[in-house]
Amino acid sequence: IDKDKFILVCADSTGHGVPGAFMSMIGTALLQDIITRKKIFKPSQILVELDRQIFATLNQNQEVEAANDGMDIVVCEFNLKTRHLVFASAMRPVILIIDGEQQYIRGNRSAVGGESASEKFFNDQEYYLREGDLIYLFSDGYPDQFGGHGSKKMKISRLRILIEEIKSLPMPEQYVRMKDFFYEWKGDNEQIDDVLFMGIKL
Image 1 (cartoon, rainbow, N blue to C red):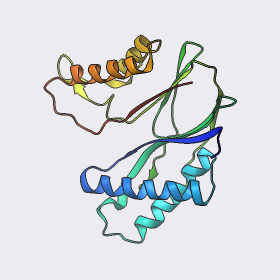
Image 2: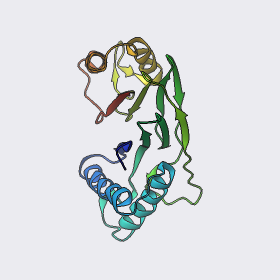
Image 3: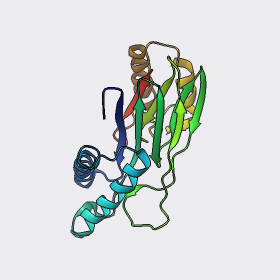
């Protein structure tokens, strides 16, 4: 946006294969247009506009395989000068480490795109962070992976424990721990989904 502000997006298409790739291409192009050309920077408004445009784009071409697919997405606006974080989330939680304490924030229970729904609602959540605080954004591919003893789903609870264990480590070490834990958990099981995991330290 300017030298002190930037927009960060963590998104995951609900479709797989070609429809999922198609949705990713559409979503990326629309986000670029919404933010750079239309100059919409408020996260909740970005999601509302993205939802509207995805539905309009796919509704024009009903034979497209991705017509009923959507996106789970978090849009964050950071002010680096004030450490002010504003985010809006569609179907994805956000984990914050504020002053050493973990906070788990649920997203709005509406996806972007997919079926049109008049009751869809996206709201902004705001936090003033301090130096050293952390933000974790992730798709469902990480906590939904099957593995461990009995090939069970990892679930958010195990992910939160892992984050608690690594939160004080330097970010490169956190990356290694996150990656190693995932593959150790997965073991010989097939990876069920794409994995996107983002960690930001202020």
